[in-house]
Image: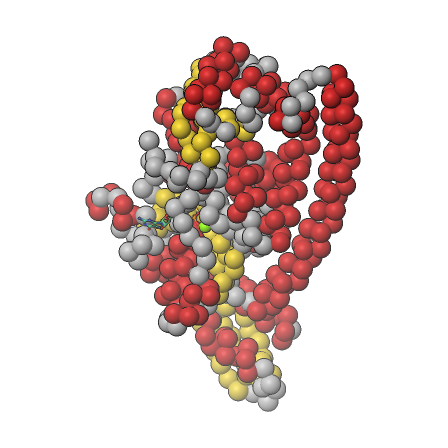
Length: 431
Ligand SMILES: Nc1nc2c(ncn2[C@@H]2O[C@H](COP(=O)(O)OP(=O)(O)OP(=O)(O)O)[C@@H](O)[C@H]2O)c(=O)[nH]1
Ligand SMILES: [Mg+2]
């Protein structure tokens, strides 16, 4: 039993097992409990059922639903949280029997997201996903409100309820289209910002991976290696916590580790198994940073026995995001939690790196590997930089390998092997 904060609302967790192995089922239930915890809910009891397929009416079958109703009553639970995605009708029927709101996994994830979203963009994205999820479920929701206000199922009430649902539906559709417009506007601003960053020509690296793998911790570790001033470091650090979906908003930071060339690193929302489709759709523009990256760092918690599955889920989600062509490095984090003999030695010519953001182990190897990948994408540049463009020449000195440099009448003639983003920048500015 986990220890919960006293203020968390008590809930019963409900698992329906169809064809999963014991191990898969237990893991999914454990993850559901972590999702509950992230949503400030305390799991006080668990009810499980095994069926060949979900019951059409009540999802777990009517006998099990009665058992659940008793458990809910005895435990004083305020919600039942179901593993799986229930149809609107299943949710409505189950709710009627157990007399407290029923949430499925999607519901729970949406709730976490709506509590955690901070920036305007994240809030709008979550609201849009929530409303789209709610639309087909309005009937069930009204029934629950009716029951709470003591209305029950009388004919007169039902009429009012249906009218209300029609009204709600129209209002929600209207709100969804408003949200779309606002998000499209934010998208435009984001595009302008991105073009601005592209103009600077620094390589873009994106952190991606399963939630709680240590993406934000890696960002913070790299920031701390470059920033000596405590105050400035405090302003740049991102939120990290042992909790699912700690990060929802994308943060982009310039990483300047002493003696190395700068690059931009973006940290974004983590992935999870069966991530609700509406949510992925809603977060597409936040995740767009991933699409424009030069290298993806796929971060995994190597101490988690399910990290191989997490890797697969991450790769499947990336497929949906259309980022197939971007080079990837696989970062096995939390190696401090593994026996020393289980951690392979790093080799910068491989694409898997073993690190610990906690101890700093392997971080230099990760940077070496990352710069090896940048260099592999280098392009040869042969240009004359006018004398009034000293800043570009400085960057070539700092970020490229110069093979020839001579001072001519119109400027400095350089031939160099440049990181692709810098080569693009030079082509744009110098021609
Ligand atoms: N022991 C150990 N713990 C780590 C390491 N890296 C991160 N953690 C812990 O793992 C937890 C999750 O870290 P985060 O950096 O928030 O993970 P994340 O991938 O950003 O997670 P989301 O934002 O939820 O997607 C935190 O409690 C970290 O302190 C590590 O190398 N070793
Ligand atoms: Mg994070």
